[in-house]
Image 1 (cartoon, one colour):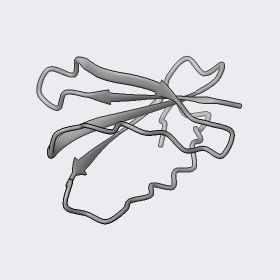
Image 2 (tube, helix red, strand yellow):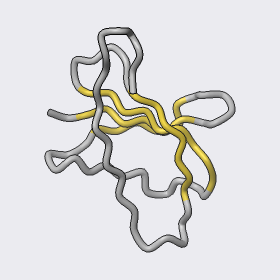
Image 3 (cartoon, one colour):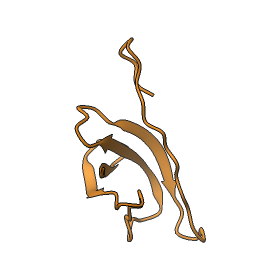
Image 4 (cartoon, one colour):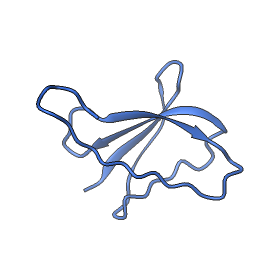
Amino acid sequence: PPISVELLDPVSGNRLRKTQTGSDGAFDFSGAKPGRYYLRVTPEGATEGLTIGIGVDTSANAASLELELGGSDCGLHY
């Protein structure tokens, strides 16, 4: 199933871009300027997603990010 992926401003938390993963789990935020951002990933049907800090470096050759989403019954999400 597709996963919602959002690129967020690190200061305001405002959404800068939003997309969904393809069938292979890939997504693309081409044109994002170098810097630090938050990335929020939310599985289909979930009420909350996982937010992590990321850095964008346009001089890098390629990048991949592997995440395994889950939660716990104590209310904490990882």
